[in-house]
Amino acid sequence: MSKPKYYCAPRFGHYNIYRDDGDGSSTKVDDRQTKEDALKEVYRLNGWDYERRAQKINKERKTSI
Image (cartoon, rainbow, N blue to C red):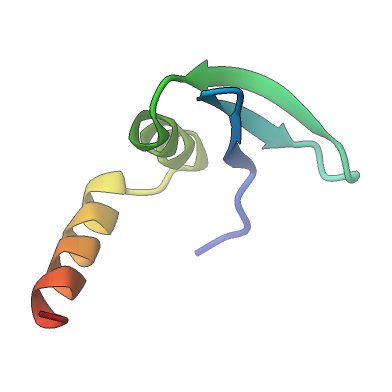
């Protein structure tokens, strides 16, 4: 997996989405009400497959029980 250009962080009851500018600074590009919605947008912006991530997490939960 490549280094993420976009990431999310909690902020006063919602989640901001930031773009890493590569020089130690970041720019806010969007916000979402829930962590899951923020993660879906971050995955989309980074070109990653969110559904594959969700399937992997579900598989891990089933095997750990």
